[in-house]
Image (cartoon, rainbow, N blue to C red; front, side):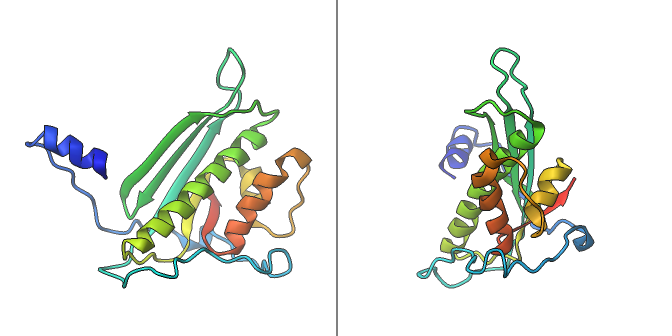
Length: 183
């Protein structure tokens, strides 16, 4: 927010307009599953001292992608995350990963875990501002294996070194913080 106001201060003839409308999302793309047997105590962190809700509820949406071994010098992947509140992009993030992944699945599941961390932080912050959030965050990922592994309770993890990211992402789905669809 400080950067936005700083920009507007230095460019007084410019303005920022946000579209307050909710995007139309086909809810049939998201499958509902029973996570009770897998993550019994999973729930979203709701601030206990949040102020009263002000205004209309907002919806949040996220697009996640990773380029497997995109850096030709050291073969590290590049991740990109774009988070929207209603139709307005509020967080955009691009970073070369700290590790070299051995598969596209690995690069994508690491990127999804980073997105989950950002989404949870944004949802907590919005609630502390008195903004009501409508439903879970819709996350769109272009890797079908990651989408299935993180959104279907019965899926099995094949690579042990991805287990932290795997369980972190699945717990966010079980808690109702996010829901994932293949894009």
